[in-house]
Image (cartoon, rainbow, N blue to C red; front, side, top):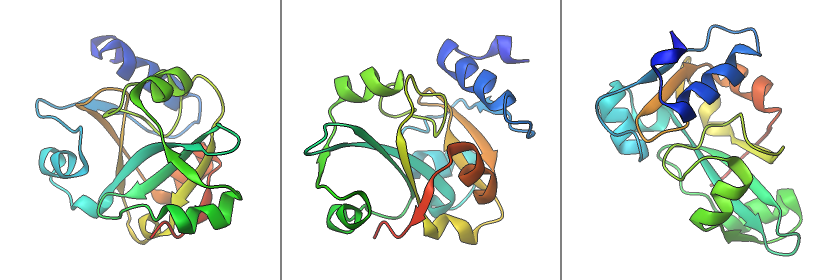
Length: 159
């Protein structure tokens, strides 16, 4: 099955297989680069898209992963309360260096190095959510509870 996936999507599928859940990467003909595009391609609401956003700690320069509901904008001041430092925007090179994936397809798991992860509490209201799977048109379906388990993320308000 996974041999038909693009290399980055296959890498995510291999990682997902390690968790023991039935999580299957699918590649869609349409772009899933943005939350709106993903929702349109999948046929779900934008708020069911779990968008993986990489930031950089201003002082530590460490990557920070925030998995936000597709309709939510991350309030960087609110996040500072949880991580103890200001956030900076991460550029494409920083994201690729730390995750191994390009912006537009960053999955919640399978990164080059462990990344501190925070999950938007708004995702918990859904029975199913969708996350990127390594390419701008690869996604996988999961539950918010599985997302928390596989990322070991802390649940916070990102707004």
